[in-house]
Length: 228
Ligand SMILES: Nc1ncnc2c1ncn2[C@@H]1O[C@H](COP(=O)(O)OP(=O)(O)OP(=O)(O)O)[C@@H](O)[C@H]1O
Image (cartoon, rainbow, N blue to C red; front, side, top):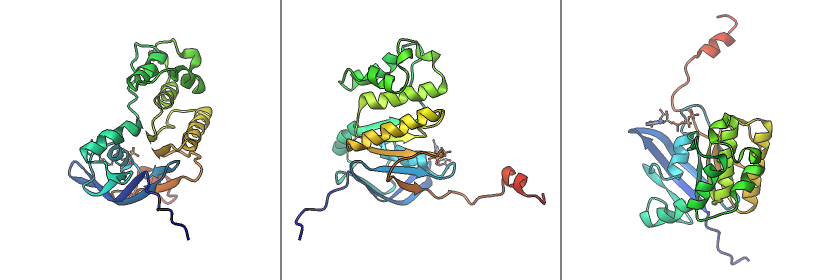
């Protein structure tokens, strides 16, 4: 008989609901995530994927249920202070400053983190080494996304919250994204991401959020109907 205590999950969502602007967006969500785990959020536009990530990032509080980190409620201020230092947030707003260099756009975040030396290797891994000394305004959409991913690597925190990380990436970019996610997880990192696009992540839990409103016939459906 094993006497080992059951492991406390790094993150636990216990019957969580979340409101936004007085509207119920998420209802009774449950998830358990251990070190090295990954959760992929899917669902129709407006189903609440970003809301889910924002709640985990602490931008909004659950209206019911609880989010536990190491068994502690993240909404308690002492806990949140420690928890937020584990988070790395990537969203469609990329916070890239156009008039400083690509390298400075990563290094600035790294320095704020009290770290050094990872920015250039991260940019090189993401295929932007050649552009490191250029102003960021030179970057294309996909290159901007690669820069955001280089930041994740340079800052190197445990919990990645990624909102549509593969948007604008080409095939190689998506493969790089899949690679850095796999490497991060091997080190015990956690990756929670929202996406509409296919992405290969081994053993990821997939949570499909239900649509918020009953689906009505759309223009696309009308085009599909032969008798129309
Ligand atoms: N700033 C806001 N204030 C109030 N309600 C909002 C706000 N942003 C989004 N919502 C509402 O919250 C719901 C969920 O939005 P959310 O952005 O989480 O969906 P999503 O699944 O990420 O959608 P998408 O696939 O389009 O990115 C939507 O129905 C939307 O109307």
